[in-house]
Image (cartoon, rainbow, N blue to C red):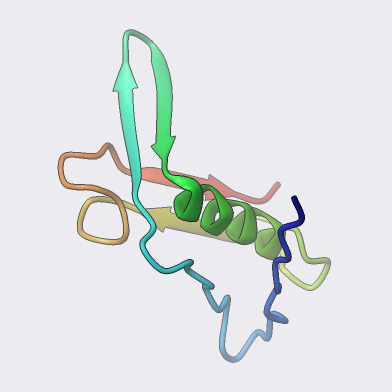
Length: 85
């Protein structure tokens, strides 16, 4: 199986452009000292896209992506911040 992911080019004036797969479901929970991410196939592909997007050389250190249940995660999810170092 081959999955193709298009990474939108970052621009400082426009920031990161997110590519979401149709039908994505992503849940983040803090459980017993661990962060647990649960996602369907579309959610996993979307997360992979976001991580590769953040890895672009043009994106500065400390840039971060913020997701919560008001922004892309399932209701009741723990907030999730992914930061480039």
